[in-house]
Length: 531
Image (cartoon, rainbow, N blue to C red; front, side):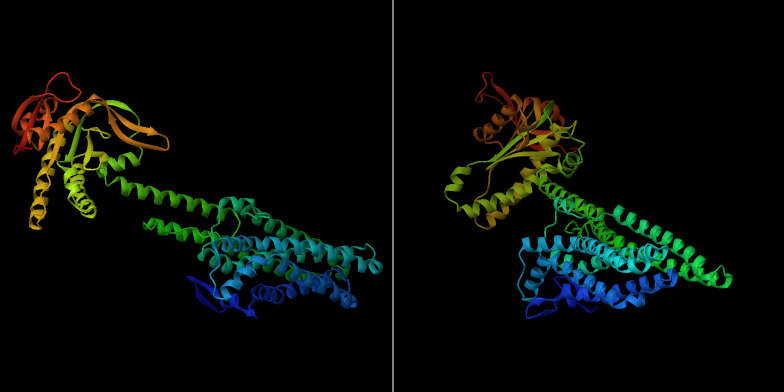
């Protein structure tokens, strides 16, 4: 069939054949199948049965023709009966209208179910019709072996024909299923599993195997009967018939194997295509379920996995904005369990001085733009030193060092991060001054102590943070930066761990909110060269 590109899919042009807007694809599929499959199968049954059993079917050709005509007509009835949604879907495409997603989904479901439904009902009607055909011959042959052999031969070829039709209709419905998926069909595992009748890979293999065995037994039985009845043991004729029958059986077996291989290869190749895309890092792909067997189910399960990978990648990207790559990867890989635990950490609070007054005299759009630029650089510096940003508070941040990843030098890394952030802020302020904008002043309060770190909140919404007196004290130290006009203040507990690495300025004992005893804080004015 000639084809054309449609919604990114190469489909046969016959899909768009119509008469006054009425789709003709199902009718053309029917005609092609009847022309290419039905006559050869029927003639094979007639010739083989007449040759082997001696039943003279040509004597009853008018009656047989009527019966076969009824069978052909009933076949089209089922072709038409089980394709209303497909025809409605194709009518939209022919009219140049975009089918709705529910219609596309229903068309996909009907297309993948179509082969089983049609061949199943045609097989039942064939069984009934050929039983009636046998009754036509009974007055002439009784229940003679010839008649029984003929009926067996006919039933075997009918079974063969239906299997061939099953694979043929699967092939014919592939373009419909592909286009339905391309325009928005949303197949689900539930739909696939509830579909009836449903032929899985195991069912197909069993069906073909049993058919091959049935044909082999039928051929052997009829051959033995025909040899005894017609040939009288003549060795030359016996050899000729043996070769003929063996060739016939070999051709049929080869045809069935090719058809089965094709039926299995299409969904396997589809999964293989998507797996290769995922291997290359492309997660914006999906397996297109084109059948109803286990391979289609596997494809939909694989789609779920890809969706989960996309979500993980999204979370990985989002999480990477707030923590270092090492922390992000450790959490997502499961090496870190987000549960409450007591440990020594270093807590940093930082915020912008005079933020409220600045917001009053600055347009909101400018405030947001400035904050985004400020945080972009600040968070990058903090994460590069192992800091985990756990909370944004408008103009401020809560940052943890030593959690969730263990870090024996968390106090030093926190102080280094604060100083590096201060240096970057000065460069940022130079740019703002050049633009005529006021500089930004920030304060960093740092304290080291025992806290409980973990996931806090409810199952639906939680955040990774730290809780305890050490966190409160770090917040109070940060509040002192305004009073003391110091950019970086650290508690005495932190200073004892970093004293040899920092240059200090003021050392003050101050009273803070919530504390009855004064707190000793140290101003950091630089880092020693060896750090």
